[in-house]
Length: 165
Image (cartoon, rainbow, N blue to C red; front, side, top):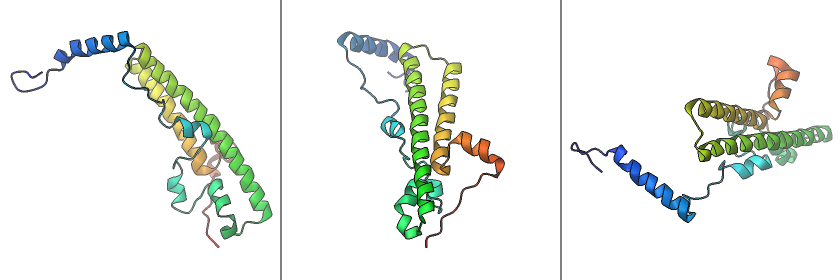
């Protein structure tokens, strides 16, 4: 609906949106069943989902990709065992962190569904989700859980570039 200046008046849509929402609720219809979060499956499986692409594209592959290149890289048996162990640790850590992300995103969705969200809660929940996602990206990019890299290696922790044989 337009005002005299040709602009859409948002307040005129409020009764329409309220009526539509009520009609949909009474008939059991929804705007669509969305999977929350949209990357849920990959998070729960601990998949990389391109989170380490900065490192990988610049010669710092994660353990999964090192294993894929084991012959080309000429890994020794010892290197192979260590890389396999690291890959297992990354997969377990990533799946656990993914579960935390899914839980936090579901909680945020529930707050919206219940109509109990406010600016302060939204900012807090988004900060929590952002930190969890940063931890997940760190796991995939560094090949180490965030607590391990900081507590065991301190500020001297580094990643190693892989040069192909």
